Image 1 (spheres, helix red, strand yellow):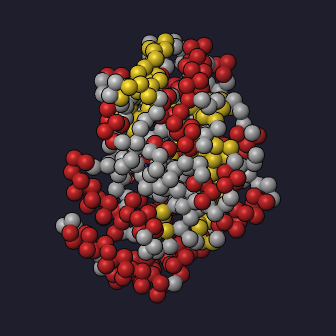
Image 2: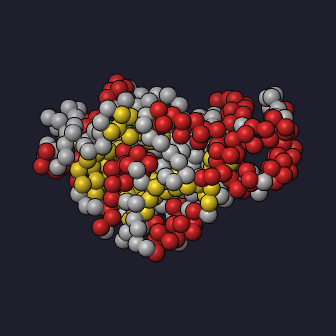
Image 3: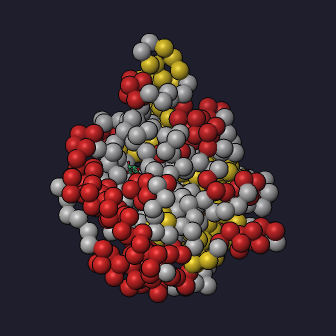
Length: 429
Ligand code: GDP
Ligand code: IMO
Ligand code: MG
């Protein structure tokens, strides 16, 4: 199977960037297929740390990067990111990056609406990244989005702005927020168009050719299954489908092109933003995990909520996400803890269940049931073979495999690119 799709198996920030960067050495093309610059993917390569939001992580390895049609693109954010990585010595050009001509754009009014709506929600905030992701996907589905290809047609952009502003200025005014001026928006878009248009093409054609030539494609998911708009903890989710199937529809390829699906999970759990989190720890252990794991949002800077590994949720993510193998990251963060817990089921209103139901009341009522596992002395940090791991750490990994019903095919033991244990090469599967 020549291709690999990487998706998050929890609530995001599992280390997808690190794993994609590592796997990219074995691929020729890396494709983002959903989400937008709500993603924050960290790559540590020697002394350099790259924090990528829209750019496919394979660019750092000099691989061709593709932004698929399923991504919502803020062109100003994209250009800023291209400029930022340039200062780190990475030059992005239309030779190294291609963008789907049919991808939808995030306009300045989208973050404005995102924030105004969050403010209006008060205590029921979702805790979005405020980057306009939800409103941009709404416009796409409502058939009024401005797309990448439109930037080459000023009259198309102008006509679409009329419809967009009719809708959004009404809403913004109702929320007491500042409205937008058509000419201003048009000028802004037309000013950046010459820098964006050279990247645009029908990427489905290039990908189809690559696939038929047997070139390896690596699909880089953003967010995670528990943030999927259908399968996650709705409404505390992002506005795209994050499951592996989206790699096909979000890039213009057949479902079979998705290849081996590698789910990324931390050896514990974290979540940014609001919403159900059954195994959350608000005590000293939660703080310890957050401190040791440096759990601060890559995009928001907000402290991530931390908790024990939830095998119920990851098992569910394995099933609905199509995950065939798991990359377990941040095992090193658990070094030295005398005792670890894994959630194996929930008690909801007196009943024991092994899945998270969809109803918000039931989700909020889910009380985790734990299995306790002895921790390990010694360090897993930087380990590059299974033989370097303490026996008890291996036991922890084995127990996770049993409970989530998927094999651990990759292990990550530090932020650094090469501190990775390969059990089974997903490209050879
Ligand atoms: P992503 O959104 O899934 O790409 O993950 P982020 O980059 O937002 O967050 C993961 C964080 O954990 C980053 O700071 C990584 O450098 C770091 N990280 C990744 N793998 C490991 C690991 O195995 N151990 C430790 N300690 N940190 C890791
Ligand atoms: P990566 O790819 C973690 C969360 C936000 C919020 C919810 C909705 O780095 O794993 P949005 O702005 O998407 O409408 O916010 O989703 N969220 C993420 N959490 N990692 C991410 O991306 C996220 N992208 C969005 O915190 O709770
Ligand atoms: Mg992240």
